[in-house]
Image (cartoon, rainbow, N blue to C red; front, side):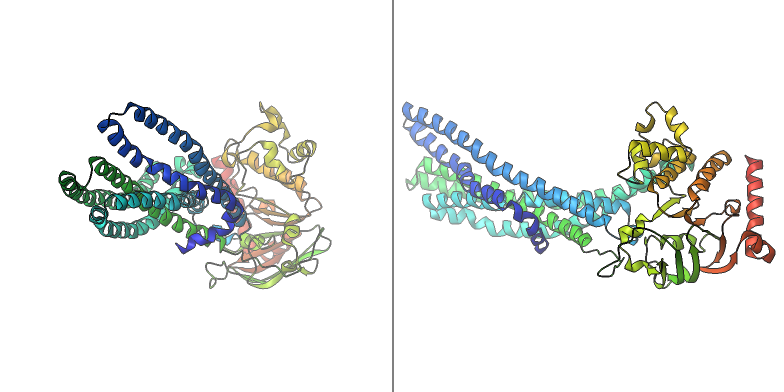
Length: 582
């Protein structure tokens, strides 16, 4: 429960509303105890004395009590609902902001569905805990008033009935401990279900293409079954504890009937007192159940707090110097000096081993090599998606670690094989290149990327919504939209990571034409398996197992008849085979 104390900064701005709810909990508890008095008056003054004036008085008293209840309950409940809603909003906003500021490694080694569950579901469970704040005041007040009344009426009978409290407390404690364990398991199983949903929806085309529906259904059902089994175990604990409490209550009621009835018969207690005692005893059970429910919700909220604040404890592994340099342009060269790199989750497995090269402004460097050679890892270091683990990367002679991260990334545009588009309009997807761009500039960028004719033919033009990840578009159309983004960005450095792979010949030609225009007067790092796209690079680097094994221009490397020449032959054979099968 200590983890709930971490919510103090979030609750502090709403201390006035919380105080209002707590203050109103006092009359609320008294109002809820009022049926005790009404029951006694009904029996004594109406049913026994048969006084008609008391009947009218009692009727008006009931109406007055519930009119008062309307205003008290509204203020009591709505004030805490405002607190819950605002705290939920703030936690979700800050959690999202924090996650967006984390380095990429946090997302590469964790389930996206699990992260969605933590960011979306856990704050809602925290809400349930916050909503119990007035319960912690209201229910004990109701219980105390009922208990005080029973002691006033007959203290011996009260001691007899409350003898059930210790075993009931033991049931609540044991069930709460078991439920805490199951709540933790439920959260883990919920993350796996979210992960299955995320994979299924984002990969629906692959699932359909490879006929994986049965596999995905089985996977989902397996995770759903694990969740349901845990849920049923928690339900078993709850449903055993509730009737067990009722069984203890039955013993108390039996004792109350026997001993209380005996006292009425003996004349030591009136019938209206016994009825009032019964009413008070019955009303005591509701606060006890509510406090048990509060304990369960607080336990769930505490677990959710631990998971949420664990994320707040994650720190980006991209470190900056205390006073990084502001950079507004790129003037001379990019230099990789003995660069080494290993992913954070596998620090002993080096992906890059002492890579050194230089790219002058306006020049292009092509990276060639088999899958796993380290090409994509290398270019991801330039915008600092990850940081080098050895050596240095310099831009105009300044180490990247000394440059403000937003300024550095503002100098770079990336066009990759894995195009990410938002489920939004074409215009907004292009505008992501530069958020302050005008509609005219967006149209210009689309024209430069050779995608304007296609857009103008659409019924809604630039306002066409393209679906999740642009699924309503072809691969070539998605790629040209990403190129339009890069045109709009006007950045001096360009990274092309397999930008023409997985495209048919016609789409590749259109994309290649757009890329050639984009590369003009820009410093470009280019990766491609199809070597026909990199013949004209100013420098070609051939990589193998994280090292540069050959470097030079196209003609120079052909004369060496080394690995580049072999790659070129394989590429040409693959392209001829593709044309023949197409």
